[in-house]
Each structure stands twice: as C-alpha cells, then as structure tokens.
Amino acid sequence: MPDPLFPTSAPADPGLRDLLVFHNVARALTSSLDRDAILRAIMQQMEQFFKPETWSLLLVDEAKHDLYYTVAVGHTEENLHDLRVPFGHGLAGWVAEHGESLIVPEVGQGPRFDSKMTKDAAAPGLRVRSAICMPLRSHQRTLGVIQLFNCQLEALTDYTISFLHVLCDYAAIAIDNARHVERIQELTITDDCTGLYNVRHLYHLLETRLDGPDSANDETPFSLIFIDLDHFKQVNDRHGHLVGSHLLKEVGETLRASLRKQDIVFRYGGDEFVAMLPGADKRAAQYVAERLLKGLRERSFGNVLGLEVRASFGVATWPEDGRTVHEIIRSADEMMYLVKGATRDNIAIAGKGLMQP
Image (tube, rainbow, N blue to C red; front, side, top):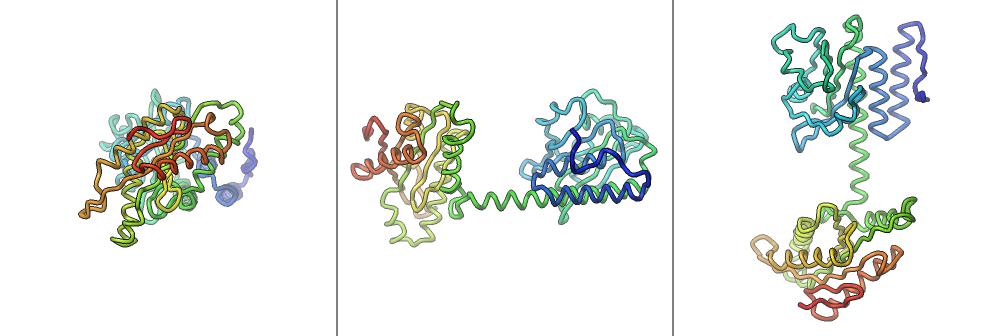
C-alpha cells in the first residue's frame, strides 16, 4: 500500500524532485512522533536516490557499547533484528566508533575495505560490491549509522553524497526528538525519589490488563504484593528526611533485585510499595513475598548508619481475590493491614491469612 506521505511518482525536473524529497521528509518529521515510522520514511527517500540492493539503519546502545538494527530492508530483514554490532566491528561499528563516513564505490580496492571489514555488515548471503555507511550525529554524539549496499555507481556523485548528508541530519533530528519524547513519557510514570514506576503507571497497567481489548480472553493469573515499611516514621524523625529518602531508594533497589525478571515494582506512595507479578498464582506469589521479606531482613541500610528495615506484606491474586482493579488492590491492601495490626515484619495472603513468623 503506498505511503500517503510520499507520492509514488516524482517530478521530471531534478530540482523539483529534490525539493519534494525535503518537503516529504519535513512532513514526516512534523506529522508523527513514531521514531521508526519517521526513520523508515527518510530511508525510503534515500532508497529513491541511491537504489541500493539492501539498506539498514542501526541505533547506538550507549550502555552496551554496540549497535542494533531498528530498520532493515532486504531479503533477510528478520534475521537482522536480533543482531548486535560491537563498536569497531565491521563497517557500521567502525563508523560508530570514529564518527566518520565510509563511502566505498568498490569494495576491495583499498586495504581498509577488505572482506573482513564487510563481513556481517549486510544481510547474510549478500555479496557486498559497494557500500555507503554514514553516522547520524547530534550534539557531538553518534546516535546511529545508516548503511546502503550495492548502490548504482552512477548515483555516487558529490551532489548526491551531499544530499545524503542532509538526509542523515534529518534522521538524527528524528532520533533526538524521539528520545526527548520518550524521556518525557518516562518521567510521567517514574517516581523521582526511588526511580521506580509510580502509582499512575500501576493503575495504567492494571486497567490495560483487566479492561483492555484483549482482557476478555486472558485468564492468566497475576498477583499483587503490597509492602508497607514498618516504623519508617522513626527513621525520618531520628535521621532526617534526606536519610529517609535515600533509604526509600535503597529499599526500592533491594525489592527490584529480589523480584523475577518479568515482575514490576512500583512506589505506591509514602513508604508503601507494590509488586506486580504477571503469571504468578497464589503459591508463586507467596514464594516471591517470602524472598522479599528475607531480602530486607538480611540487609542493612543507610550506608554507615546500618539501619534495619522491616516491612508488612499483603498478597492477593487475580481473579480469585478480586476481578476488578479496585477489588484486587483492596484485597492486597487489606492483607497488608492485617500484618500491620498484628505482628508486622510478616506476610498475609488473601484466603490464607497470616503466615507463621
């Protein structure tokens, strides 16, 4: 299906054609916040100019010091999505590491562009005859790399290469804008003190799970664990709110480290936390709660202060302990208060009551 943003026919006049490209790219940048859609639209314009046999766009993962494919067009596109390219490896890795373009009209004509350099640079099984590899840079940082393989040689003129640099600048703008939007969205669902997700995100996930379009056919259980720190007010009173805030962050990190990979922990408010356990029935949730309780008991907090932190845990499981968002939250909350009013530093499970200390 043709992309409505981009006409299928181009004007005969080269100057008008080039202006149309810029117009289409500008429209893509201003009509959507979807990073991948914008980048694919920009790459389609490059494809019209250079007619490569295959092309791809990789983004930098600064934490892992490598690149991953975000847009890839070719007969083995699916094989590239899980491929990581370390900095310094292959054409894209070299470009990412040095922040410089590589334009190779004929691979093998120079010592830098030997078969080792181009190995794994393109789709498996593709014989690389020519390559264009350019960094996407913004604020002196490389954000990604564009690769075009086996372009028409007559398309590699000074003019078209300059044109490609401009399109790369547009792509870098799109990536930068998308990252700013992602960061803003992340801030709206993140607790400032602990770095955990906040209660707004908890309710959003629960509403999506229980009231979303796929919820009617999904009977997979999940569990909630409500966690309330015992006597936390005494920490603030004795050591001040700065120590108290740091302790909350430490507790959040401890809880997150004790959960399963698929679990999510939220700061519910004050000294309360909630763990959401997808796919966990009551027995699995009890096991996780016991591990969380043990994790707090075995650690000291507050750096040199060596503070002990204890908590009351309440566990509820969907659907047996509540079918709506408010019912399942109320069930877990009631169990937590059952512990709070009895022994503290313990676990209560809906339908079972207090666990043996």
